[in-house]
Length: 130
Image (cartoon, rainbow, N blue to C red):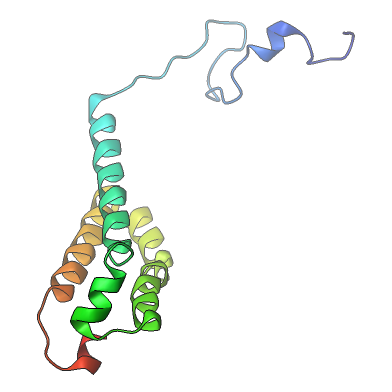
């Protein structure tokens, strides 16, 4: 075990130490805030809801085909709009960098609400429904 950095004590050292921390002193401890758990929970709930909205058509594919006159490719196209919605990720990266996580999450939640509301508007013309 003569190689430098291979001892058991070296493996216990934190990989990311604050730059002002004294390596010979006690290890720096980070503090966990309850608000961070709340933000993580809300972010996870928003991602779960987006998954539910996105995967809406799978279980009702045959019923939607009969009720709305959709073909299999129409339903596949509706399902594929979910990944296409990830296209403007650069906008949300910029928004999160400039305004923070809260603003980008609120805008994402608003767009998800708007898309779900538009989906629930009853339309009689088949091309508009698609």
